Length: 283
Image 1 (cartoon, rainbow, N blue to C red):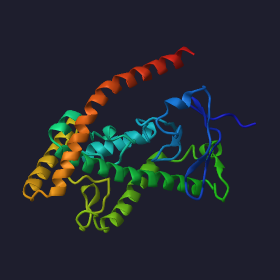
Image 2 (image 1 turned 30 degrees about the vertical axis):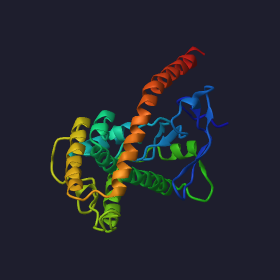
Image 3 (image 1 turned 180 degrees about the horizontal axis):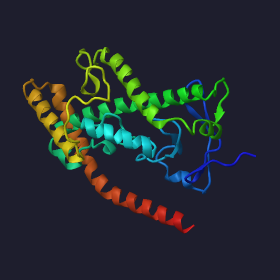
Image 4 (image 1 turned 90 degrees about the vertical axis):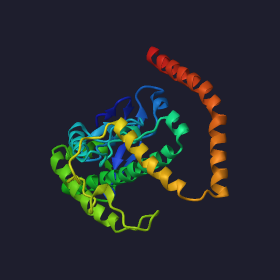
């Protein structure tokens, strides 16, 4: 009889690997009744998105995508580049990209700059997801886990337990470099010019453009503000159309009308969440 594979409050013995695509499928069940109610999303466990050899707890918007060993290497890479080159999770704040509500109200151009920075993070997150499937497929090939049938997660983990995580990180950087070159040849949707991902001609994350200290969250906010100032200067040089003016009016009316609702309902939501957590602990 196969032993159960438990991650956190969930039995994930039913998860499987598709050796052709590297995708995780199957199902999971609660070990603790009601545990799924605290999930931000329905992915309760996922493989490290660098090496693909360790099953990690997930389900939160703050969940980290990498095992301890791989995360150390990714953090070092991002520090040496002085920016988020390889995202470590879903939320933009995990990468120092955010804007305070009060600042956004005082200067709407900050919102535009924030969206540009957030879109850049999302683009890189998509590439991390692509590599996550790629490394699982490579692991299946190297461990002779081939065929059309899904592979039980426990069988896969046992087979890949001794795969080199350092080699997987190096392979990810090399793959990122090659795929970055392909991206650089694609026309930008905004300007029609060639994109230069990650600040380098080929998109490689292994060699930073220049050494500089890592950006703290406050440093990223300063960077967003600088970008916003440039955007404001460009906007002032253009004539304001009627549609732009009406759009600004609608945006501000929407924000002003929703401020009282946010002030009233957020404390109520927070108290309900606290009460829910206390009830689950007391069971």
